[in-house]
Amino acid sequence: MKKLFFTLAVLIIFIFSAYSTRKNEKHVIFIGLDGWGAYCMEKADMPNTRALMNSGAFTMKKRSVLPSSSAVNWASMFMGSCPELHGYTKWDSKSPEISSRVIYKNNIFPTIFQLFKDKNPDSEIGCLYEWDGIKYLVDTLSLNYFERVPDSDNNNRVTCEMAENYIKEKRPDLFAIIFDEPDHVGHVIGHNTDAYYEKVKELDKYIGKIIQATKDAGFFDKTIFIITSDHGGINKDHGNKSLEELESPFIISGNGIKKKGEFQESMMQFDVAPTIAFIFGLKQPQIWVGRPMNQVFKSK
Image (cartoon, rainbow, N blue to C red; front, side):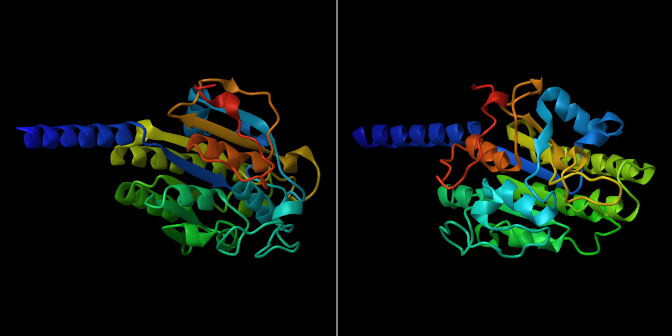
């Protein structure tokens, strides 16, 4: 009788533990649009993105670090710190031009992917990208899956389809999808042009499909979506100090996020990683200078 009671007690504890884990399960889907300037949102036809803005919180004044270029800003976003500390300083940095202030493991400055993997070794973490430079900034040794999308220059649909498949098959806990647009259109045709607005409209369609994939996979209600960018642009360029180049959107919506609308607190690129760390209850390293955007969470 005692043995039966003990067996039942263990079974109940196991079931409760499994239920609690599922109940507290969290997923973050991070979508980056390279060269997506905040200035464009006054005119942009992006209904899926606006739906996330309406159901969550956002700022149109997140500022890039200088220079307002790609690698230095994606690095700051994923590494929670400034170029003077992580050492990636140029648009095409593949390794630090300044020695990183610290390296914890994997021969790279600590990233959000590394922090999450260290605390959750059984988690599924992925990164899908179009620009090859991303792979030097995300600590691929902390990822279960990373891949550059083939032939994506003129076909972002492939990126979307690969993201949908990965979401449905692997149910990632943390997944970054980085489109190399609207940057390409900005350079070739120009920012604030009809072609630029057509491209962001197309990308918004893919954002909708990625959101739908989380519904199909059965974890939409446990997911936080983040949509953001590394920099904006002006005319056919970026890298300088105009607000058109420096300001990019940050949109966050989903499980546990307030329907706050636009928030007025200042935000920098290096605040993105601490915000993701806060979602997962991760302790950020002392070397990170960014702050989580606590005001967007229902618990605050």
